Image (cartoon, rainbow, N blue to C red; front, side, top):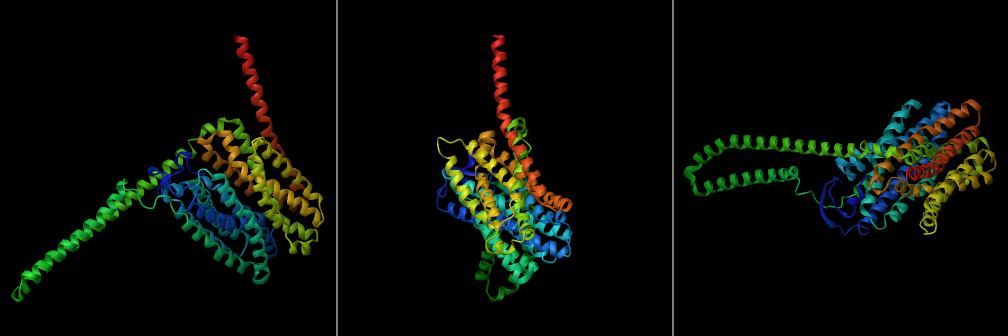
Length: 510
């Protein structure tokens, strides 16, 4: 995702931009590459799965703090939104520190956010500990998982990404059941403590993200200096030790005092030499780190702020507009469905098989089936993508009309299946901007999805506070979503009209 397609298939440093050789790596499309898929799969379970199950905790927070639904929903939406919004900025950490270190730090920050949230005294405290801290940690662990799968796969990259992202559906089902059980048995505070401990497994997933190149780059002058210094200091110690042994061998019992005087004179010089060498080593280490941070920042800046040409593509701009409204229609049901079920007095049936779990399970099959259909030679990816979007919009419009568990279950199944178009988004983005701009363009689309996830749930809660119904929030979000789809449909028509007009003008001039 944050890696140029030119680099795929070659040895890599921990720094993703430093190529060691142009020799194909044996782990590409096999070997340790499948461990990357497994690691990314569990990252999706722990991060995206737990976020889609936050509706369970949202009900607990409403009962605990007695705040409005719009204000309380900000906790979940902040965590979801920040995870995606920080995507372009986490690229700076990846360029500087590498994917492994970024993911491990993200796992620690995410776990800390869960643990600190267990001691929340009010909703505003959760904004910082859970919304910002846990969301930032999730973003730092999530993006390296996507990036590393792309680096390790070339021929089967679509299959690998599809398998790893199915962790979202499995995670939503598992985390919903887990959080409901923990909240019922131990209370929501202890549940968050336990979930914080579970989130430490993100560090294990990060540790599996080893770079393709097993060692450091010997052509890096900073690395050379860091290796030479210890060798030089070791030789100094050895030569001093050999000199001492020679004097000890040549000197007899009568020369002990002379030997002692010589050693006493050499000790201050040797200590001063060691101190200078340590100072030099520290200076060289700081210089190397400064150069690496500077290089990482330059790569990140040129990769994101040097893409102004993308915004001259009106179809891509329309795609961004679509992304701003699309993701909220998928997120809102996960956050507010548990409370909607309570309002309809369907809690007993929902406890047997939660509606959010239905969305999660069918979502898995939707990704696989839509991906297979889109790969057929006689099928257009765009047609599959747009048809899935229309199905999701209709499901959002019909959701408020269903007041029985069976009706809601059918609509949730349609939402889960049609939202499987997420697996087609990289392909659609590539069709719009080309392979050379895919990484930066997809990062912008994910950021737009993050803004949608950030604003959607609080908006639905705010509408409920005003109208005492969730119905209008689904209608409004569905309407905005439909406008975004219409923008995608209008742009090709405008392009055809402009091309026809240009041909007509050229013919008239001739």
